[in-house]
Length: 429
Length: 152
Image (cartoon, rainbow over all chains, first blue to last red; front, side, top):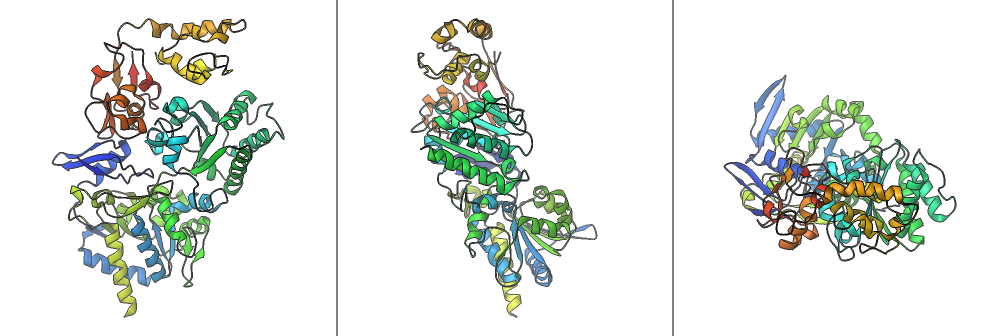
């Protein structure tokens, strides 16, 4: 078996082994999600292109497919380049250049919460700690609106809860774990503090904790139906810990009060820092390279994720804008790269996308792959082993070139690069 | 029977008085659930006012202390391959130290290893529940979030 890097979720595990033989894929250390992903893409040894017209599927050569895709994008009135969350950083950069060339809208699933978090004061486009530091020092780990046991399986065992570290020599027994969610999740099974709040109750809880910690209004009565003793226990755990990390997820950010919740999270962090504590907030998103999208698109005029280059200059869009436009069917041609957008998008927007002309470039077997008028099924990056991705703590992880990678360079980056070159040539002529 | 340390913790005085070896009530509850300490090792619990809690704790841990035969079962259908069992298993950490730092088990010397996306018990005889140790360790079961591990 050989060292590989798993690209199935935002942890980008680089301590795992795999091999692909006659009996399929074998792995050591990959979680169920990672192994299933490897199995599903292991047999793709070359690019396959499917064209769909009037319910009929036809196989095309790559050259013909690129020609057709280029014509569709050039003649589009309102092109959208969407996806990118499963692409390498190099592919995302190429996609951004393509958006500039086409004067298209560029957007990603990262704009559904992560980019708002990263551009809010609580982060300001950077993180102050990383997962390796959390492993070594994390004393109180608080999952707020995030559920790693069901989405990023190895988050707790590899970095945050169970491993031993410099200041936490007994691993889980040296740490305190808290979970705040709207339901009894599997992550709660490893927690000392389990707080189940009603939907949308995050801001009330955060305000109560802040007021208790500052001494403004000590918690003495139930809040959100939660007994005071339980909330006081959580507040005391925050006060006692010298190194706290709050892993906040979509449950906190996408519960209808994005800005208010993020601002209260920031206030909670500041309150504890004034008490002399080391406390950090880190987003908890599971798509493998949403953070790469944020980091790469930030380099383009400092604008994170969703933007429109129709005027020749990048203008930031709100995610609502893109989703509303998708739902209204405003985009006539949508290039979906490295993402199963039909799964990730909310219902109305997904329906809008399904009704537009989709060009798909990515791994085989996704819903978009089955719906696109043109599907360019490329070699998955776990196989090609080329390029880098950005872990959820903004650490760049280089994919590993392994035996299965040899001669298998026709990944999404290759296809996007070829397409971009062809479009540039056509536009010059 | 699987004991949840939180259930035991809620019955403790929760004063973190530091009179026991584990030092904190949570750590004491964890060791209590593993059978490494008994209720009598908590001095405040023996004081007046905690009689009911003491009785309940003794009833809860009684089955642990009377265990004569043992076994470990792993339900692969429930397992997500999270690796919690690999990292918390004291044997794994001793025989392949990087696992204690959260790294995947790569050798063939550990009790647990994640093979093809799910946990496998590859060296059951090394488990501390079996001779010569015969310890009442159930840390893998305790921290398996999907209840895939069952110890009896």
